[in-house]
Length: 242
Image (cartoon, rainbow, N blue to C red; front, side, top):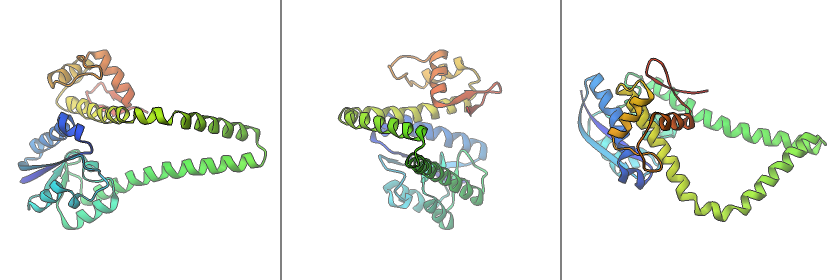
């Protein structure tokens, strides 16, 4: 089956480095090989937010107007909005490389659950603060201490706001690099790396450096996997640690 590939990264830095796009291409290449797809064209949107409807993006619109099924690396590369996903399912044919055999119903359920989880976490935080306020008003000493500690942290946070703004770009870059490294590690494992040394060798071979610009070692891989919440299982697969 002939397909077209669509890739998206949120920042120009990811696009210029090539790492964010390359990780997505690895997913698509692997799925195409296993599923017997032939990628006849590729479209890339760089520096485009996932909140923008795919058909409202320059290259996204071209990909879906191409006439072939569209393959994306992960569902969130297409959109993080359930309404966007549901609308595209009604009028377009697309596949997700990490879930190549998923039906439209399964993809819809996956998107709904992901959005529901994000909303649930936000609501749970709001309810916890509301409950804490109510207990404090009733004279609960522990609640009063918790609120006092929270206010103290907020004051310190506000006093450091200017400094934080100065480091905002660096933090964003670090976050994006973490996403890139995560995808790169998963791709290395996907290609057969079954040990920390093998993952390190794979990252070096792909010319991906550590945050300090050095070469990867098994220890460095272990530390970054721990920060990302990843575990290398005995069978040579990556899982999210609890």
